[in-house]
Length: 313
Image 1 (spheres, helix red, strand yellow):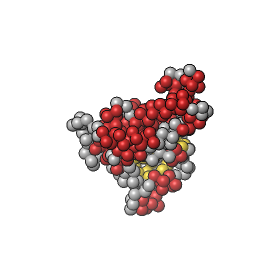
Image 2: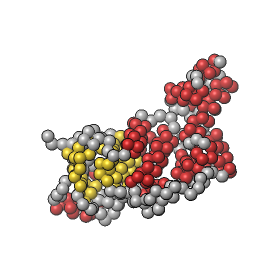
Image 3: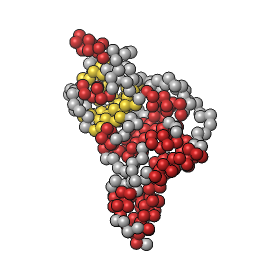
Image 4: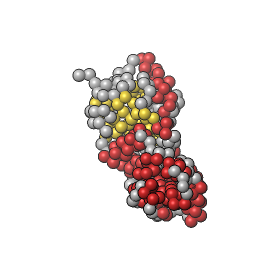
């Protein structure tokens, strides 16, 4: 039985090799490369306004694929069943049987031809080199961190985090971007520790926000509970980078920014339910919940009862 692929042939015709040499002249963006593929992605995080990274999923593209050098690193999650992946380009050729859920790491600036024999279904997570360096700094790793070249490797934690990001992008809920940022932070930390050239070193000290930074963040949150709060906006309010902020905030408060914001939204909702006669859906909207069902679930989880019953009591 002939299978299909995310990847490309062992021997490329002369025209293909010429195109490949042209591709090496500059780095392509993920969008430019996506426009060259034989089918558009069936899922893209662009639709949920998540800007920390880019997540896309494809199905049914051509089994042969020319990948130009990109300005982003990317991680592939192979989906849909076991397959054989062939890769030619920089370094030695690779031909490997890849299980469903397994991961492949591709560094920015590399150029490959891929061919897959098997089911055509895969997802790409694109991460900028700057973001990877920023995460490495938080972990006190070298700035010039390099991904280890691996095709079809297994890492249960990374696979689970990747699948969780795909699920969230497929069915976004309240605070979707914040939740995606939390998943991405853990994903990148694990990626750096387990799949890069960075040596494992314990942090020399505990990162924490200064009191004036924490007060600015809390004031910003309270003033903007009715709208979507991106992690970058909170980091900007504190005057820090996104990944330094996330860890420093957790060390200062004892919970993640996502958990803290959710608790403040529910606290605001409790006050509105007690002090006003606003309909429950309007209370939800004023507290930053776009979906009344999601609001009811979050409220019940933190308060122990539904918004309507809380008001009746």
